[in-house]
Image (cartoon, rainbow, N blue to C red):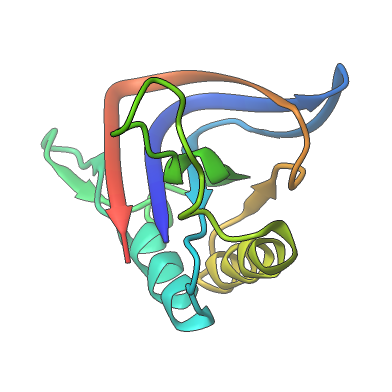
Length: 145
């Protein structure tokens, strides 16, 4: 599993022009499932995201998690995180899990993140999503399990 975690001042997600999810501040997480990934990896990823200390404390040091600051997570499925462009200019996606297996793992990971005490707003699996976000910092962390 891979995740791109971005600290944001706000974010919204639309499908077909309709607002689906939005957060006032916190994290936007783009989440990809690799062939062969299992629930145990989703659990580990959720725990890491919830406890990742990338928000500043009163001294200006990145020492607080999204839970600590009362933020929310916009959790977005993104199979293109497993795009391979090492051969030619058109990425291949053979490492990305098939949708019928990836969707339940995406949902499970979102549920596990919420179980960590973080409000989670979701994207729409497989949809053409339009996401607006105001990056904070910017702070971007890549996670892989």
